[in-house]
Length: 152
Image 1: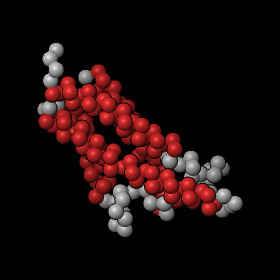
Image 2: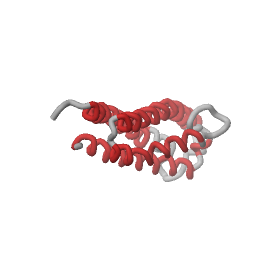
Image 3: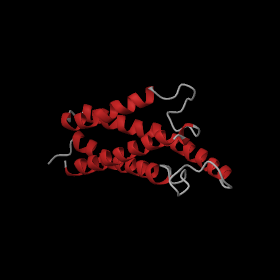
Image 4: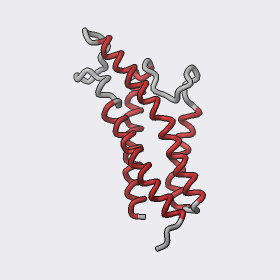
């Protein structure tokens, strides 16, 4: 088997997909809600630790904002590489998530320059649940993609 551009694309995609998996694991475990919930199943809005909890939420949102654009860029690079390598099946598998990333980027809140994760809006339980479901779906997609790229 010769070393082709497609083989290079798959090897680079494996490494970058592993980084995306770590991004999503960080999102699900560290910032996906454990620091926001008070352990009784509701958001910690009152009590002695409210100020520390709000500072923690702001810190987590700031960290998550720094991960959004690199995640979208890396996934866009995947699609561009597979387009150049004429790997149509792999490109077809990645296009739906690319379109979702583009939709999410262009429909971000109008008041901020960041993509998402505003410390005030994340306190809404519906938004928090949506972000967690989104993260779990992305984790499943990236894990399946990783093994697809590995055995391709």
